[in-house]
Image (cartoon, rainbow, N blue to C red; front, side, top):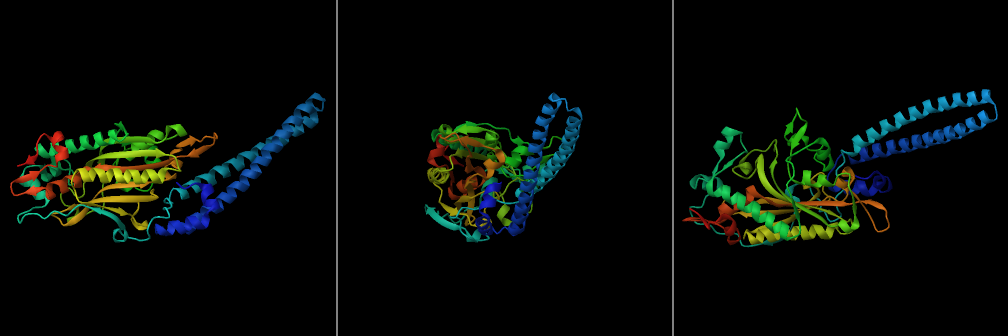
Length: 424
């Protein structure tokens, strides 16, 4: 959530940057927020004046009683009662305005960084780096869903029977490959200095609100109505919420956590050839990296996180590219996002496998995640997160790109984890 004082002091800049995200209602909402803020401050001032007057009269009552002026003291008490009633009225007006302002502010996305390119669709994203040669496959090469059937690796129909479309069943060597990837990603993350966390995979409303999933994406989250809990769409949500209502010290930075969790997304409205096989699922596994950082260092850390994820893809020997997302393709809470895409040789298309984002103070303002600087002043920290990595499309690319006429080759870095170097 944007800070009110920032909006108040930088209205034109806020509107300019929200235009990069193509947020249509920006001006009307921001104007409404500022109008309510002005009214709130006027009421606050009047309320403070009333309280000061009431305090002054309270002192006079004691003096009048001591002086034996009982009648005047009673009159002063009556006046104090009237003032308290007015105070109550002001407090109610204040609360109403604050609630109305909050309801408006939670509709406003984060302002994008000045480095974010303008654009409306994924086609407007900026490719900033590409690595590796696209493999040339043999004549009988197949997409991963056919390979899954050929080698008895994934049963999509069994998943439909048990749960529904988008919930595959991994079998045999593919189940082991999944576990190998999870352990590989976690080992690399902990070696990089990330503390491993095993968080809950359900969260409450406060947690969903804290990281910006609520009220923006409630339609994409699985909700358990009886308990009013949500299945997590990413480990970012529970891990970042560890720092809700926490005041850190500067010496605590950088705070680095990683976590493996299953993730659940309704993906409402997704259909067509691009969602076939592992391309888009309702349940999938992911290792997430999260950092809470000093505001002065968050963008340098974002570059480090991006390069770290790129290093994982290099170790997996996958051709990949890095995109800087345009304003129209960014998430609600992000200030700057890099996407990593791997090349799917059988499908002849790029598949997104990671997003690495800096949220600046957008999440931490909601979370009230702060730190005390060297001068003892309390400031909002910055939060960042990244997929390192999401498994389904990694598995799809590994199966497709490494297929041979005699089987599927496992990248050398994974062999110590799988215990086999070929799927035959």
